[in-house]
Length: 288
Image 1 (cartoon, one colour):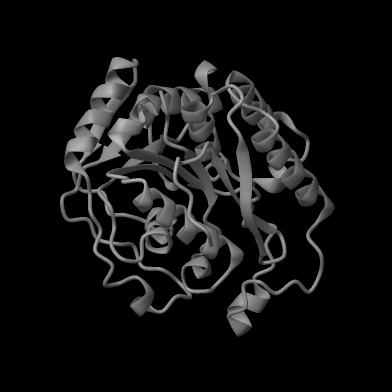
Image 2: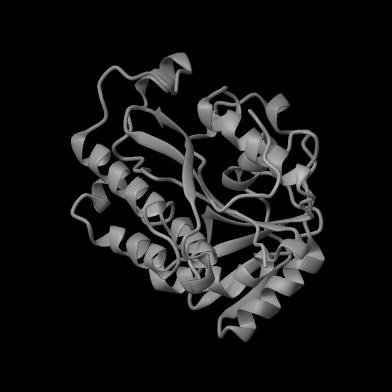
């Protein structure tokens, strides 16, 4: 049985919505491939929405608004029509509850740039039916690996569901150099090289994604949180946790041997590394 690929995308700063980059080009390629292969649904876990207590929530607002995006002209996003997939929200809640999670629908949640930034770049011609899954604010990596595992059955090719985690490979807002962006709207300026600890973690993150598959991928991703450089690379856990979701979705026994690629990468604000990964492939590929 063939399975749809899974993406881990580093969405970076808000300016990644408005500026051209290698990441933006790759996101568009991934969207074109998904459409060429008949994608019907997108299920995403972002970094900016977390449920408290023991809950995990699924967005089910039929008319969600968009949170405003700093440093990006409204023409880049204001008129993009979101397309919440309410039947898929019901299915995700059912799958999560069956797997033992305390999953609930949230009918008032408005979408945040970590998800619709990616959708606009992937599908500029129109948003496919999309379901958003929250994280849980305890940020337990194994919990979120199990969330990915619970939804991995959606990857059966005939269902045409694309699973995406959107966070960051290196995403520590406290270490970023904001001056060039604030003064000159230049998010890609590199007055100085990235700090060594962040470069080290970036390499560890790539190695974990590229050189592991199946259950080994799950172990490798969760172990990244124990590295000495982890807290340098992630001042908070929110942008790392979607990688655990991806590892759960693409790290089953039947995924052993699945090829993963790092399709693009951009450094922003000196110390933010936006690495883009795809685990698995479509039958039909699209050139950039």
